[in-house]
Length: 331
Image (cartoon, rainbow, N blue to C red; front, side, top):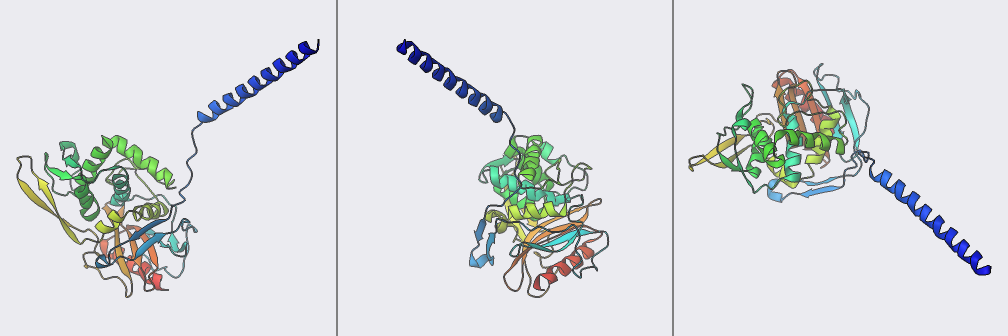
């Protein structure tokens, strides 16, 4: 009798254990099938120490991002009325000035910050890319590098063309090469935007050519430049006023394409305020977006800032207003 009782107890215990593991397995499978919620960008500490000959400071971006109000005055009311923009202190993690920080705007070629990020993240810069007809089939007046169908160039040199001359043909070719086609690349752009917390943005192309469904915010542009600045290759490229890239033509002949920067601070066509050093950034211009600029700079005390302006009516007003923002970095 005692043995029967012990056997019964043992069987009940085994059955209970089996039921417990079954329930646990069920919930584990259910949890595994649930999509993970995208966590807002928390910015791992990026560090870039440029060579002294390049004139770059050590760039250490903190884990915490700048946060602030949609609009703050701070004595910069003279900025062009219709423009949106902000000044971000990377050291203090503050936003000394903002206007329409979270308003939907069109980024024009500032879009290419995200294009560059994905090329740097997923591409092999030493690989050879062959320029296709589809890379050149862009709207009339589009900013072009000067490639011809069948040209062969490295992905790294395409990146120079994207960031220095803002070549739309270069952006299309790089996107197609990295992702297989531009549609997949654009999907990755939007995934990456969400990953860095740029939830006010949606892109439909790697160039920034105008589309009503291609938009961003001033704050999201800050997030993109903040992310791009984590790559030393990016910081190397944006300092160039001009650069020549070698190209192998379809017939095997060799050529060089001249890249001239679209950033008037880098070309020295515009002088920044005293004791402000412009390290580089990205421009953008379309008839709808207006004149746009996102910059990384350093003030007299070595402190790093990002400044963003979009929607300026002219290049003159863009650089006049940007100089006002840059002046504010020195108090």
